[in-house]
Length: 339
Image (cartoon, rainbow, N blue to C red):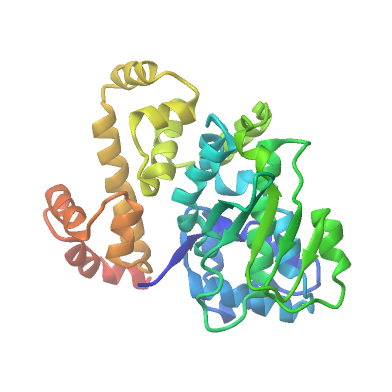
């Protein structure tokens, strides 16, 4: 089954490539990615194209640390409102559990597993970087760098990694990695993993910078300039959209993401003449049409991304909404996709 990622995973890509005097549009087109997709962080990109893009960009820019440098420009804001949701959890372990449920949608290659090495040490192992037939050092660098930055945002100034282990061959300038991560970095190992003190797992997320929360919310709203209604309505819809694929899209978790009590959210929706159930259905309808019309997501993947356990359930609901199956809709609207 094909894998897709959010275009937000390429945040900072064009700027970084241009800094080397290279035209990023040429590289994007070369691997089959429409440059316009990068304008919408919630659009989907085929994962194989994404991997090719990172490796080709490293070659074109003659930069063996391309993934590391791209990851350095990304942080918790890269994953949007899910970052706010993580920050509202009781502990860092809970926040990582939330990320494990969601992160496959953001980028297949940064799916990870957290385990305890001993009483003092934990490791976060990336479990899907080795499934590809070719080495993907740039993706490995980006994945570990992004997760390290997210942990830094969540844990605060005391955050530090104990060591980093990478499968890739040792670069010509290994000190670049050591300086960036501030810890020992080992190459040509049997895993892509980040080791850190186990004590961090019980920490409450750092007194989360409310300015950053506001920034995340504003970014999400700005990408939906066509959304009608007030900011509260847009933010609720954004939260639903971001949590659909996690399996945790309950009114309680949406309220948590919004920083309010579930009853207050219910009252807010009632004032707007709707219910959470109706809102959830409307978001699913709009997202279903948007993703089908994009033409690059399989129906099975689409159903999972909308929070359905099975394609058959999604297909049945879609036919109830629009009077035709998802396949029929895609076929009917094919001509519109040509222009």
